[in-house]
Length: 203
Picture (spheres, one colour):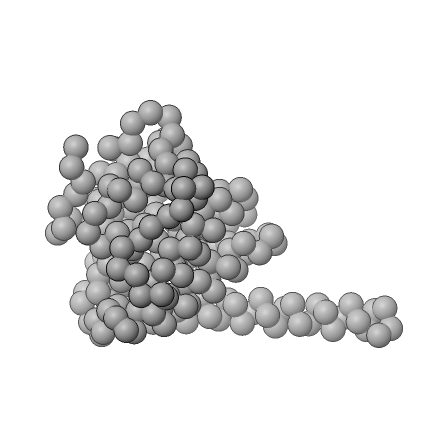
């Protein structure tokens, strides 16, 4: 079955993708080939959505590396996303994809209801390379093996991805601010922890 048309809502596109999945698992390569137009934004969205679930371990770390790889391609100015064989071969369950689509749909519809094309230059070259840099940093923070570190940057990527898809620069700004604030918090907390450890051991 062909994937959703260009004018279909993003939440509906995700539902169609889940419906098209056959077998028990699907590969990231299969997902990527189904997305067609504007694949960057949709693929970022699909990879980032599992990362929004608080205290979920395993899956965010599986998708974070492909997420970072795709984000780097935006930074590099690539127009079509690509994954190397090892990353493309990573799989997710078809049932998990359907569950993700169903649970994310209400939230995606809320974002769709308030988004519209504005400040579109932020979603296009060359400004999208700055967005790509932010996405690389947010993806890297998802890999931090600490409790709850995936949710906020995952949400930031979802908002930015929705902005790219909707050509909504305001969403891109909101998502970027959220992600940068989170990284700043991590750096501050890390520096504070190092300072406390140095004090404790008498350095």
